[in-house]
Amino acid sequence: MEQHPLKKMLDAGLCVMVNSDDPAYFGGYVSENFSAAQQALKLSKQDIYQLAKNSFNAAFLSVHEKQKLIKELDEYYQANSN
Image (cartoon, rainbow, N blue to C red; front, side, top):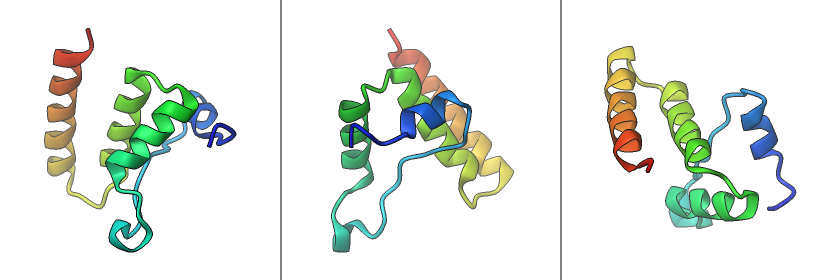
């Protein structure tokens, strides 16, 4: 996992994200995947925030729903970024 290019891709401005694929079958729930990526790649709070934001931007949601979720994410990040 330490060799994964996720951090380099994120730093390059690519719209990368952390997901899960059928966790009941394959294991690896999204929170566990975020935790594993954070630990292996030494991701910062800003990195985790950007990964989550990228996920909302890439999701098959309406513009309104994306804006709503990103607003909630922004508020959470600002309240917890100390």
